[in-house]
Amino acid sequence: MPSAVPEEQAFGRGMQPPVPLVKNLDAVVLGGAAMDWVAQVKDLPPRDGLAVAHTCTKYPGGSAANVAVGLARLGREVGFVGKLGDDDNGHLLLHAFEEEGVDTTAVVVECGRPTASCFIGLDALGDRVIFSLPGASLIEHVQELDLTYVGRASVLYIGPAYAEVATAAATAAREAGGTVFYAPSGGWGEGGLADIWPVLGGTDVLLVSHAEARVLTGQAEPEEAVQVLGKMGLPVVIETWGQQGTWLNVKGRILHVPAFEVTGVRDTTGAGDAFAAGLMSGYLEGLSWEGSARLGSAAAALKIQQLGARSGLPVREEVTLFLESHHKGRRS
Image 1 (tube, helix red, strand yellow):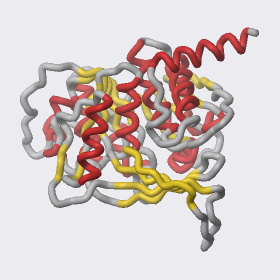
Image 2 (spheres, rainbow, N blue to C red):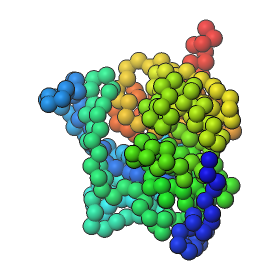
Image 3 (cartoon, helix red, strand yellow):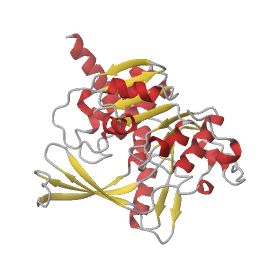
Image 4 (cartoon, helix red, strand yellow):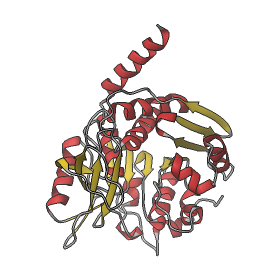
């Protein structure tokens, strides 16, 4: 496992950290935002097939952006670090952040470039296909990062990001005493682990889906996958697998947290983002890793009952009531 990146490398070509902010944050989220177009169909089409959409609606989205909003709804002071185009979609996304109470001080707005967007086909069971349309979304150079801003948070969440940028942010966060959560979400090339290896050296908690863990480790069984990743020196590894639940490797101790049974699933888009927000909120509350994962699972269960990646992201009171009702159900 690589050690933390040296300070001179983290700040990139002699870049000096900017002037500190007065305000402290619970969390900073580094990643991308995008505008989602969601088309609802009865069934997803086969190869070369056709499906007729009965609705097509525009929603603010982007995986990391959803996590930031999820944290804000759970009562956390959170800032987002990413890039937007200076177009209608960019302005709408910026306004959506501000309405949710997400701090946008460190967002970079790039003129003359469209904001990234996604087209999502969604069937009656909540399954979907996603087509990504490139545009301004991710911070591309370390020089665009406000590293002092990153260091003001207790937690740094890194979603899909360029390795050099993610490594610099992780180093700044850890040097300031923060905890780094990393969810690469398939953000690597043909090199697999080698592509994200520098970021892993500054990661405290690695978040991967079952499919991602299988690609990175070659292990189909979650227990084995999290063991392999943990042996690389990662303190905490968390693998999510939808209805199968969540597996955790906490310093060599393997735990399984079952998923909640949900009826009336409408849209699984953003379920992983809701889980990540709940997990970090639980961590910030001082819950155990098992308790934090359970809170994340509850947030995801509530989210998938609503249409849109953000529409179902719950507030803390909803999660509390959900957990209480399921606790009573288990006892009765």
